[in-house]
Amino acid sequence: MLNKEPDYKTQASILMATMEKVDKNEKISIDEYETSHRLLDALSTIKPEKAAEIHKRITALEKAYLASKITTAPPMHTGQ
Image (cartoon, rainbow, N blue to C red; front, side, top):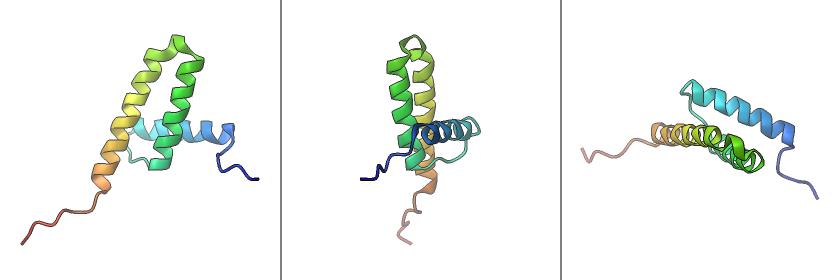
């Protein structure tokens, strides 16, 4: 059976690239968001001494994802 989950090196690369996009205020995809969020959550469990710093990165990730969703939503019908 094939595992759909990317290997750890691939996931780490996705996390690094996604956080670079977040830092540059670029749009991120749902896949980038989910993979990065999952890895940051796992990292905060493994490295509790870094929890505050990791939480800041998760918050930035969430804000970037929400901004990406808002800017990629279809235009609303104005009724005119």
